[in-house]
Length: 313
Image 1 (cartoon, rainbow, N blue to C red):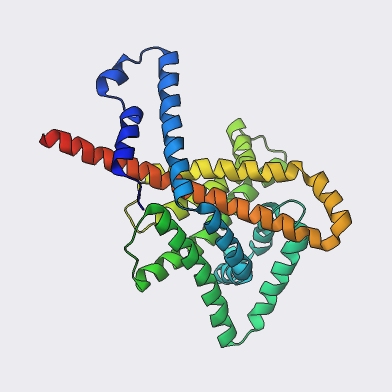
Image 2 (spheres, rainbow, N blue to C red):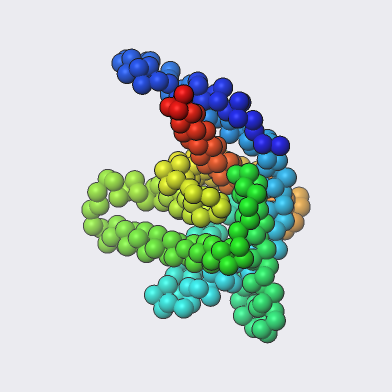
């Protein structure tokens, strides 16, 4: 059941003020109150869509699919990087970056197995490699289905369009990571040699994690929906999601001492529940970012239709 148009129009009237009202907001407190109300209504509509789309169930499904597709996706990424000698040298840095962004308390145990299985998969026969690719494509297909459901898009993409989209995501991901690693490596090497850097460069290094999250979510928000996506709304949604992922990892890092005590009791098995909780929470934030992007587009479309109807009257 779709969100009713009357429901949207009711809250659009509160979100979008007339030009006269906007011009009357001269003082800073009035502007702050206005933007707070707009933020509140956007948040309400996003949460409504979040609950309506059953994102918790979708996140659980994607978590299970991720466990099956982790090794195939890493294998594909390494294979793409190996085609270019300049990018092949960054494989070790890429693995270190992935390990840094996994759940604290489980990355030291999970990542070595992923790298080991990925290296062993290169010795598989052709049929095994095809199975790995299909497993990775199934994860992307499951993610795309969740996105289309959130956007309430019933028209499915053609197989050719899906494959091109999946290939773009798998290709742009390693390139973005490699480019970021190259930039950060250059800046860090400048600092190591004692060269003075500008303050904004130091801030860029500190915000590197959020930047990587932003680029990843921007790619997913912009390419995955089978609709015309505004780069502006996709960027806003990606920024909100990247901040959410950063906060999530900060929370997990803050409880690193608790994870160590948990590992004393359960041993190596402690990494499994920690990793699963982190993975499902990450998928929830990613889907919430897509939900926000869909809400912003829905509000824009409904507003345009309302203005068009008012003009005709």
